[in-house]
Length: 155
Image (tube, rainbow, N blue to C red; front, side, top):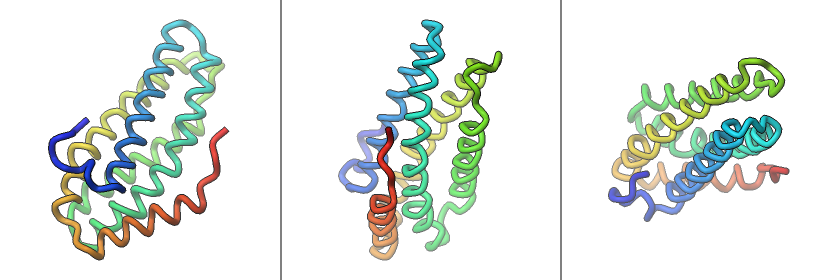
């Protein structure tokens, strides 16, 4: 995770990066559970990961992504990241711990999620720090406040 660009000094970006770290830690827990042959624990951690991903993606899309699009910056990359979010939602909805390909599908999902997080942490977040103006940061702050109000606690 990038620590040298100054992203962590911007509270909304630091929060998104902290959420990424939490998701990567859950991913490690899922991998260890699968390695141990414990699909039940893996499925539970996977459900928690999915529950964390939904409000996180909403914050990114309504905040940093929307602000960059409003400025006309990096629209192609933003669209790719948003497409990843939709793909993750579909994959989570289709996962079945009893399916024979469950482990393969989960490992592929976790690998894709890790790459996605890298593209945000090392790409779009540093770019936002240096390119967003006051209006952009207002969009980001508003998105964080709105998603905090509508988020439901994960169980």
